[in-house]
Image (spheres, rainbow, N blue to C red):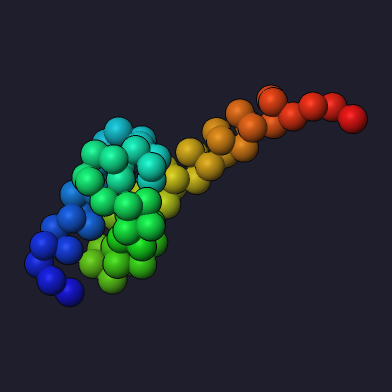
Length: 78
């Protein structure tokens, strides 16, 4: 893996952990696509630092749960 990619992966992971950012927010800050961030943190990070990958996964799970709860608030009852 190229050094610049590895550096980006670690920087994105640190950012997500420190701020609780979503994939979309991290993509905006780092100037890359959501797909790139997703691949960086779900595939590449595991090969670089498994412990850090688990921490990021935990943050993203919290974000997913928050999104699910928020979306459920706007559902129209039958």
